[in-house]
Amino acid sequence: MVTFTASRSKPELILPARPTPCEVKMLSDLDDQYAHWHYVPLVEFFRLRRGVNAESQDPARAVRAGLAEALVYYYPMAGRLQEVPGGKLAVDCAAQGVVFIKATADDVRLEDFGEPLVPPYPCVEELFCEVGDAAGRAIIGKPLVYVQVTKFKCGGFAIGFHLNHCISDGFGMIQFVRAIIDLARGEARPVVLPVWEREVLMARNPPSIELAYQKFKPLLKSPAAAIDHDVMLSTPLEDMVSRHFLFGWRELTALRSLLPAQLAASTSNFELLTAVSWRCRTAALGYGPTDMVRLCFPSNGHGRHGGVGAFVPPGYYGNTQLYPVAVATAGELCHGGTLSLCHAVELVRQGKGMVSEEYMRSVVDLMSLLRGRSMTLERVYLVSGITKLGEDEFDFGWAERAGGGISVPTFASFHMKCKGASGDPLVAVSMLLPRFAMDKFTVELAFFLNGAKRDKVVINSSM
Image (cartoon, rainbow, N blue to C red; front, side, top):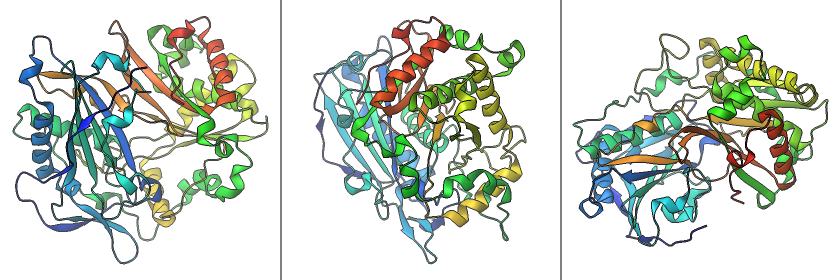
């Protein structure tokens, strides 16, 4: 694997290009959660379009200009988090600015990062700003956004972001990044205009938590008590292995063929891959047959065609993710061969089906009461599908997106979109497991793939 060191400029604060309102904005009750007190590391890679002269383009200058313009529309992003009376968080919007660094890596080309462009990326830390103690939970008074643009020898480049999760979920983060690129391309304004309106996701008075509490109650036990009951919680990170598994048309067809025709036709790729990953992960971790295992997956709360979340306005970039929960015993998931896969698919679909507007509002009410309290992920598989966030629309005109996504191993699995060497669309599913369990997971997955080429499925370990 290639190694390199980026040559960085001194960090500078980028302010909005024009005056913006000076005010304090409250976060919603879905934003203001201890689980969001961190920065999400996102890296996006771009290649020059055919015929573009690398010497004629300055990606850092373009991104810097687009960022300053975007902060006019997304001016809270240029503010700082502060605690207000009662302990809640708010954004002090006073145009304090975001951190920006220009970097070059003249001894590496875009193709050196592999094909397809999925983690682990070599020397990934060289693609990001240093964020100091903000890398932990120190977020009060810190910049909300850190950006580094790194140009490679070939003219391609990467944009590394650290984005504060209290301000946005993945949907909102991508919307903000797209605004930067739209404006860098020369658009007069972002294609999608941002909306704050965090009051739409504030708790009701009085709250009504029963619907959500029924699902979340098992996750509220003491973290210390859970460690002894789940090897995922007791295994140190250095003894974990992170891999990405690729699924193309062939693999998806092989998995779908194991389902009854009617179920196969109505099951989405996310439902299918989540179900098989949950089943294989449960078996690999060796849980007892009567152990309760849970699946949590974010469900986008943005309104669609008047359905769930229709009261969330278009352009809203705050946290809207709900967490439906599916429950089974390990024995239910792991015994029965292909029948267990059918059962897992049905459980995933039932979990998605439980999301209603009342459930969404009940989650908001419950989260407001649990603020500052972390949940216990005992025998929980947390998975997030980020294939439809809109990254495919990142386009500078003279440069197009080559790949990217969440750049570091995490407890949660992510489904990310990428392209194979021949340009065929693939879904990359990340998986973090103890070393002993990763080989078992691969064997379980190979069984369900029923003869698909394993070298197309397993991607290099990052740990």
